Length: 108
View 1: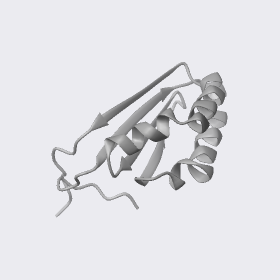
View 2: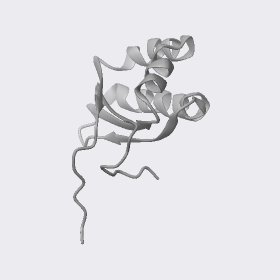
View 3: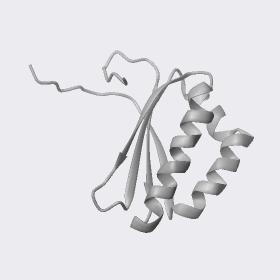
View 4: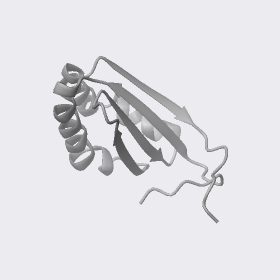
């Protein structure tokens, strides 16, 4: 399970994919395969979660990495480039944004 805390020194990445209801299931299947077969085995990978909106037009991907360089190396790898070409047939826009945790609010 991915834990969120302000003392996390690694890299948090929130990626959004704009898709269509018709392409959503295919894109999710490709993303799940990428995590299962490749991403989770990459140096520095700590965990991830996939989220889908009700309209099935957006997928949000939350991932955590030991360091920014680890994420960037995975993203630039030949294997991930090949997978993104396949995924690109099922989304209209992809935006990965790197964040630091500012605050966590929890139920007491």
